[in-house]
Structure formats: C-alpha cells, structure tokens
Length: 246
Image 1 (cartoon, rainbow, N blue to C red):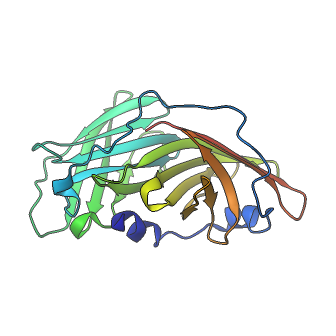
Image 2: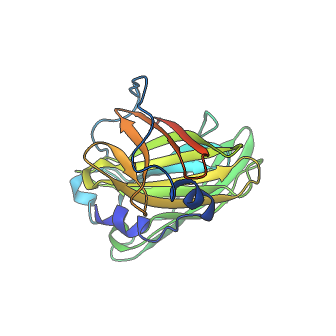
C-alpha cells in the first residue's frame, strides 16, 4: 500500500529501542503461549475502492501518551467527516466541518469531548492520501501525545495493536500499526520512566515476525496477538506484548 510505505519511510528508529534490538538474538526467543482474537475488530477493510487514491477514505492508527487507537472517516461512502479515538478505554467522538476539495491536500481541525472537557486535534493528509498525520492536539491530562496513522485501502486492512515493553528495568507503551497485505509495520512508544516518545517502522515476514530496520526479529504476530522475548549481547532481556484492539 503506497500510502503506508510513504509514511513509514519518514519515521526514524529511536535510540532507546535501537539499543534494545540491534544486538538481539537473530531469532525470537519466545513463542506465543496463548491465542487471542479481537472480537470487535474488522477482518475486511472499511475503505471503499473509489477512495483508494483519494484524500477521502479511512485512516487508522494508534495513540501514545497514555495509550489508545484512532480511526478517521473522511467522506467514505457518505458526506460525513468524523473520527473515533479510544484513549485509556474511553471512546471519544470527533467531528469536523472542513469540506474536501478535489485535487487539494486536506487539513482539518476535529473537536470532541473527553471526560467532560473539550478536546481537539488537527488532521493533515497529502494528495492521494499520502502521509496522514495529526499535526497538533489538545487533550486535557495527556500532554505530548503522539499519533501513528496509515490510510486504509479497499484491499489493505489496517490493524492497530496496543502493547507494552520491558527492557533493562524500564517499561513503556509500545503500540503497533500493521498492514499485512504489504508486509509493513510501524510503532509509537513511550518510556514510562522518562516520558520520552518516539516512532519507527519495519517489515513483516511470511512467518509473522516483525523485523526492524537492522533485520532483527522484534516479535511474532499470531492471529491478533503480538509477543516477543529476546536477550541481547549484554544479557539484557527485551519483552514485548500486545493485543489487537482496532
């Protein structure tokens, strides 16, 4: 999926997680112990074929700062422009009144209510649905929130996973976006101790293993479950766990 590739190519692998994985074992040391299927998640794309190369359509992704998912609908089959964000288990409905103009990029503010307070974000996307991003947001109690978005197409379902990592006595949020049809994945993470956030990307092989930019195995995806456990050359264990929620 071109839009997923365009977006992920711009992301930079953070120094913290690079240090975690660059010396990891050449294969995943852990095998998923349990199975999991997201009962509410879609198995086919919501996006319509008419919007595959258009600003209009469906965009899905993850939120970090606490943790959550986001889905944006830009006139996908109707004239409505809406978004739904689930943050820490609380669902927030957004709306926007900015109309799409054919042949132009799209930038629009979205507004809603979160725990009784006003909430807002600004969504931006290039021609053909390239490089979707949230350029700014105002979420009470959640400063420095970051988003990772990808355009869904009629033949490429976007899946979102919420998870965690542990490494060298530190823990963090580790949320993942996957497009299995093009064997791509991306992540957004936040260190619980320092508050530092970052994002990055990689590839997905035929065995369901998430591969980072240095060709190291990060984790394995089985159905709607992601698990990874490895030990680097310093003897420090890296553990990743996540479940699909969108």
